[in-house]
Image (cartoon, rainbow, N blue to C red; front, side, top):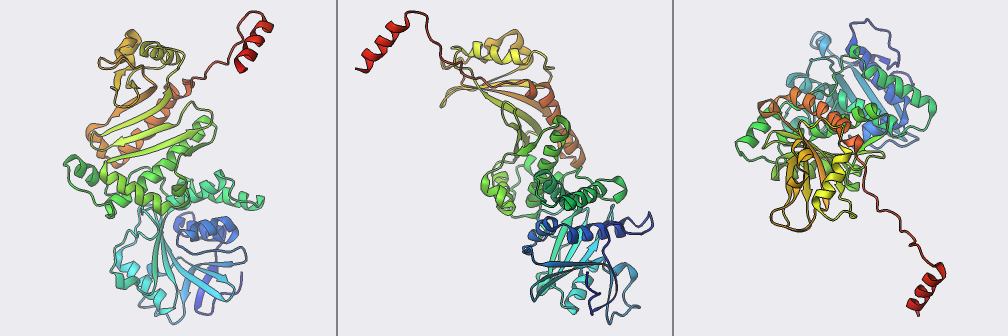
Length: 447
């Protein structure tokens, strides 16, 4: 790294292994992540891309901690207002510079402090201020501290939650997004620290602060605005929880579990957020589908805010070699012999507008004909195994909702999902008889 910039009178290069007191969790966390940005190309590309800052392979990044600016009135600036770090990205002759302020644990950054950092950045002609805390934000441009537009007229204000940074590290490692083996090791060690309880970095264990209000609004049929912070943060929190569900299921199954996403949503997270917020305001339910390697179907998860229910399900095509709904249901029931029936149901659907039938697994074991339709003779073409969790008043609890969801999904898969097998049409058979006579029949037919 080059010598300290001229406009600083104090500051140390960010270290991957900072020498600091055990109590200095904030100082260590900032130093490690800034050094990680400097050390791992793909990590800085991923995080800075979220700020619309492009990082080419030839660009260089400087990272400093505990910085002190020149001409700073030390009596006027309290020690707690000293920025935690500074990033300087150089691309040819161009420079992009950002001041960093971070908090760990339950500490947050208030409006006054953010305003002072923006003023510092403006005075020293920096491009941005980036805050890093355990506070959640839908996008880096959605800052948890609300300021007037004039405050960020000349200096951009961004926010990374520690959970967001940790997720980016997880995704890079999980998707083999880092080419250099040494950098893979560095990123793995950074993630190990971020996942440690000693780091002061909170795991995603609760929904956004507005969750309870959103659930209550849905319950009272109050309108929701798709561009409001409460909706945007709810959808973004749900996206974070989806990633956590994938990681939980990956660990439990020992295989790759990924989200099933539209291609444009995979490539453009902001479009995904916008589309999901729009759909949520029309129908207040949260959805996702997990793709589990070699599973019979996608594991679909729905959180219905109107009913305050969690649903986990997998859908199978009914076997075509069986004629009646009862016979097709029996085919499925044989697969679920070991399933504990509490909370489990089976839904039978038919083509077009024909009736859909729905019954508990417990009742169907004794009477599989219950899924027959009184209004249609058409046999069910799709059979769906559904696990219901009725949270009632607990649904609006930020932590309880996540805890119950993270219990429900593995329980459904263990009790039912991993037992299911998709129906496969049997191979064609050659009928017994004279092969030559059969061949003559075929040739005669072709003639």
